[in-house]
Image (cartoon, rainbow, N blue to C red; front, side):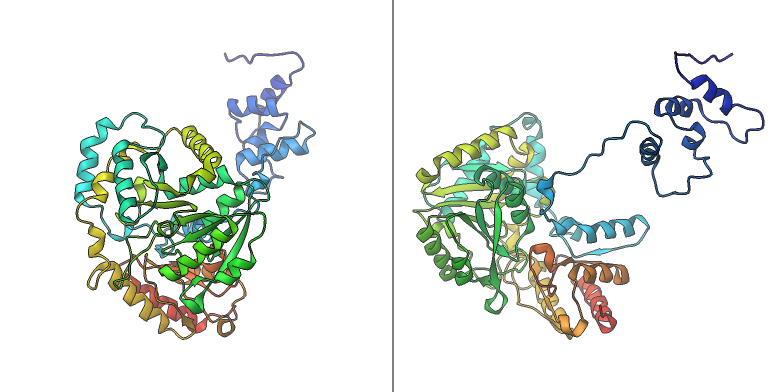
Length: 479
């Protein structure tokens, strides 16, 4: 015979007795009885038999917490996100993406034009890279030096020499788990509360998010669509003040696909020199340049300034999942000694970046660059860019600047024609109606509801279907 343990003042025996009373339509499991006694709630309610509980949307844990709040017991402590996140935005994977995930869980197929992830669209890592990683895996089980493997940093230093970055040594190179980690690290090491930093609008939103999280005040300068999305130097100039510490550029640009010419870069250098600012240059797409254009690293024009240049293999070598990026400190490092110590400290705190991915940097940066086959006429990225630009701009109410690099386009939509006042609603409506996932312009800190970003990584037949559905949608859509 099962005998319940007893304790002074406990009503457990009474609860057990009540739950096993004659005429009961259901038996309450013993585990529920113990929980009920601890929480001072009705065990029948825990067993979902309470006739007064009509809120089927609450989880069991939520119901326990609600009961504790309402029954005179100890108030359950609620944990909220940090207030530091209140102004942090990352809609590349935000509410619209959450809705797409919900739809997929219900069995709906969603065509994703929202994120620059090459692998799902059939872009493969070069065989030599995979082979070399597999051969070195047993040597990559331990930590590396915090800054990275010697072989990886040596290859990156040689790459920096080819890009004409001045005054770079092995100690000026840090590997990271993608450029994203290094952006976060550099912002955290630099910014105090209230420090200002100039970041482009539109931007890659991680820059704004990391600077905000670090306590800085982000000041967005305009990139001018009428000038091929180049930075507006005068807008940049008038937004600099005594609290401004740095200028960020994204070149080639995400989300616009713009490539900045040397003349524009020189104007930015002159501005940074005049106001003694650091230059951060995000160049992750520097090997995805089309139309015979050449990418120029802004640091090569600024030997007397302190510059931090970011790049990696995620896009050029189609290995976004490997998470391997790097940053290069160049130019006048004497004026940033204390800041560099902060970078070293944070680099040490994360121990090291992904060692297996570091092991293939030397292989990836040497020899034949397979990405070059994609960005010339006949290559996938080139031909897909040609198609998406022509197809989207053929839709009444959509215009675009043709991208020169990367694999994104940032079309403009006629908000008056379609009565669009909320671009997130536009993206959600397109998703729900046509099962196509894009990112609205506001997700890139563009402050008008008149743009969206598309990724042209899918094959042309897929892009053709997608553009056809967007065209159909816009024939009837009005907000």
